[in-house]
Image (tube, rainbow, N blue to C red):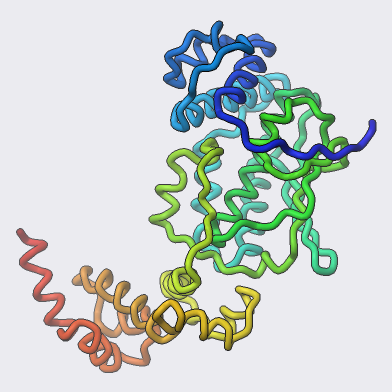
Length: 355
């Protein structure tokens, strides 16, 4: 089978891709009209499938349509494989499992373990480092390599790239994208799913990227994950991994360490993880009007207020959770942050909670 590279076209309007997806639904014996209706698209499917149709599809409608189509493709392939399809709920659970990881390489390792538990229904994940490059492989167990299987696998590969980029708060630069399929889908569809050059007919589904990303800290929180998962991985036109201010990445990295009860990261540790020098990190934080010390204090203060809301937690335990040597040191710090002692703050909260 010839191996070639397809260069993605610019991201097209959703309407054109919606038409191609509905055509694939029809080719597989599905009901295109019912699929469009469930997505909330008012136009008649017969009209949408005509090349001359010039209607519009909103981002929300396209997200719903893509979710319906992927579910149909996955169900179609799973029936012939003889196992249940991987569900959105399982994708969410994978994300819940990795959100507490400290670095991207740790997150990928945990995702690998999660997929191993699902057996053949999920892909076999692995990462191989060769010098300054890392290869993330997603090997699936599909016996038939047709358009339905390809769309399911390309959705998975695209989803991992978007998820990993979101976790570290920056787009992971892809050096190469390889798939173990011939070019079965129109470029306007693959260009939306994976806006990077794709090499077809390779041994595995693979993302090649600079290895230094593996050491980036996870800078997202559980609360952010709840919002992220509302439409992920079907919201292809939403950019989740836009660059975060460095101070925000540092703040979340410190907050994550506190939540995990891990040692607080030093300036040098974070600088290495972000691929910059300690002096550069210090300077850029100053340019954003803050410092490592201020961010540590902010994170400790935020967590202290949450812990003080639990009357069963002794001040000594809270001090330990915040990496203070003892309750006296914590009490002195908290009074500096809020103007109140921890006991006064907790007493002031009690009437409000009772009301």
